[in-house]
Image (cartoon, helix red, strand yellow):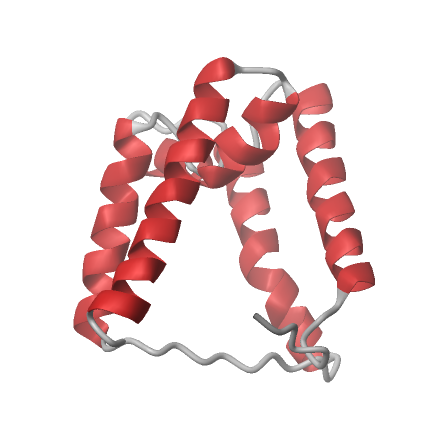
Length: 144
């Protein structure tokens, strides 16, 4: 195994992780809410809708930050090596997984583990193992 030193950005990665941690902490301290994207989006799609303002602002920030970075000249190379069928199947599987796990990687992995929730530790370990297995099958068994 080798490290791609061009893509190796430990300081930027640390800064991003700190920003995510601070944002999750601020949301739970001031709003009493977990920064789980599936729950935030799900709250906007459920009826009756509640807490629309902060949910919309949170999601707008997720979508808006890369747009602002792009306008500032910080372009990101997007290289998706899958067709639309694969993307749709993957999206459906991720959606089903978040429903079964009662949350997503951001809710369980960032917020749940930091609060010491055992179910979040189990859910995150399951997410990771499923990801490892998927990569192994794709790269070594199907030749993708």
